[in-house]
Every structure is written in structure tokens, then in C-alpha cells.
Amino acid sequence: MFRIGAALVVGSALVGLSVWAASDTGADTGIKPTYDKTTGKLTQLAYDSNHDGRPDTWTDMDGSRPVRARIDQNGDGKIDRWEEYDQAGNLSRVGFSRRNDGRADAWISRRADDSIRRVEISSTADEHKIDRWEYYDPSKPGSNGNGLLVRVEEDTVGDGRPHKWETYRDGVLESVAFDEDGDGQPDRRLVYQNATLTFIESHPDAAGQFTVRQRVTH
Ligand SMILES: [Ca+2]
Ligand SMILES: [Ca+2]
Ligand SMILES: [Ca+2]
Image (tube, rainbow, N blue to C red; front, top):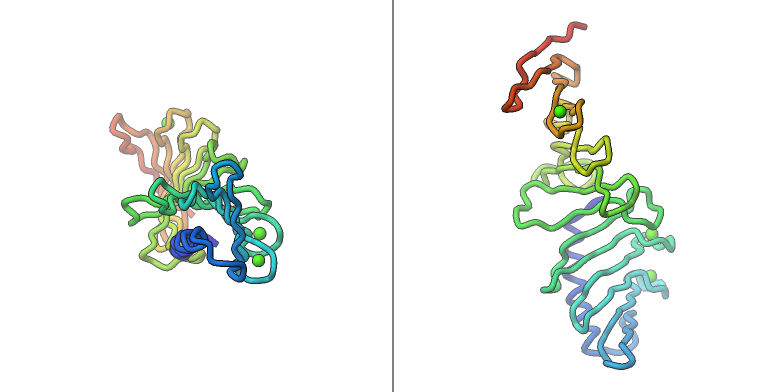
């Protein structure tokens, strides 16, 4: 579902395409340009990417520069992919709808250091209220084409900061830490071995190191 690799390819293809369309190539391309009536500047491109006669990709343009795009990838009439471009016309952020309800609720930004990929998720589909962060290692295959899940952070109280932390090893839950007093620092950590709860750590010192470690007997 979150194929940023493919996303970036599609993005650059779109940029190429938009420049191409801007040079006015005729009607058979499936691309419909809209121009500002006063300035004559290109403002939008509607593109029928799968040639079914209906546009599915709408790119807002600032002349030859793409600004953002709304895409209905599966043709159900609801937008399911949102692309944002930087000043240089490079794809900078992609939004998705995990619920497929026509509203973006998860975003991936392109970062200089792409060794770990972060997906920002909003349970209320509000890009200003991110309350879940998922981190993937794209060098390892995962179940969703986005790499292997390595950790998750969750804002459980709605203040914009994480209060729950999960780590994964080879895709299996390794630890869950909780912030119990709302200061943004973990107070208790559950440690799993072979997917079995093995230790409960608590009483962190000033440096955040847990000073009490209890073995869980089963
Ligand atoms: Ca179409
Ligand atoms: Ca759709
Ligand atoms: Ca705390």
C-alpha cells in the first residue's frame, strides 16, 4: 500500500509528463491542461493515466512547475493518493488514505537520509494532528512494500508527542515502553523474547535508564 519507491518513480514521470504537456502536444495524450484566463499560465493538468476515458490524476501547476497532485489510483472515484512537490518540482511528500475514505491520513516525506523511512499517521485524518509514527527499514523486505517495520511511536494523549514506543526485531515485537505520567519520557518497558513477555523494566533514572528489571514467570 505504501510504495514510496514506486511513488517517486510515478512522481518524476509526472513531472516529465507535465513539462511535456505544457509544451502543448495535442489531444491524444489523455492530458487536459487548464490555463489561467488572465495570465495564460498553466494552472492544472488532468490526466487519464489508465486511458479509460476518465481523468484520474489532477496536478495543480504553477506554470511548468507541479505544486501538488490528487490521484485516484484504483478508479473508485475517491482520491487515494496526494503528492506534494518542492520548489524544484521534486516530489517531497506523499499522502495516503489507510481507510480509503477519500481523506489522507498517512504521509511519507522524502528525506535526505532515507535509510529509515517514517510514515506519519493521523487517526483523525488531520495532517496537523499526527499521532502515530511508523519507521521502516527499506533495505529489508516487509509485508507492505515499504520495508520492514522497525519501530512505532504513538501519541496516546493527543499532545503531539509520543507516549508509547514499540520496537521490532525482524518484524517481531521486541519491546513496548509507556510514558505513564505524560512527561514524554518512558516509565515502564515490557521486553519480549521470542514474542513472549519476559521482563518488565521500571523506575528510570535521570538519564532514562531503567533501574528495576523484573522477570516475568509464566
Ligand atoms: Ca482514468
Ligand atoms: Ca480511489
Ligand atoms: Ca514519563
